[in-house]
Image (cartoon, rainbow, N blue to C red; front, side):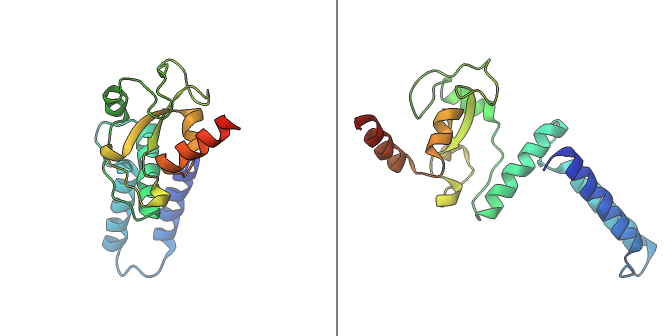
Length: 154
């Protein structure tokens, strides 16, 4: 969800709150608007994050909820440092200066994909080149390595 969509959603909720007859008092309406306002500020759940970081974090939380996966806030810089800026899929170094969408730029891979029952916690995250991560897609590491070795042999 981009910034425009978030702003549109919040303004839609504000209009709805003003027009909906279900509120029994202006106090109820005011309390609802405070909750909406606070949630729009807190997307991402971490203090000190920029708006774009909060939006990305909100998206990560949403993806985890979609798959009913455990979720914890993980600063990606910690994963990059933990993995020594080495892609954990191809074991080549990752250039921190490259940006998305360069195939050799950094990305975070779920070792066990969310779609396969994995979680969004530090132990299930690893640094990967964007190209490597995209080739892995929703495969587990074992499936991806088998597919990769089959392609290289052929």
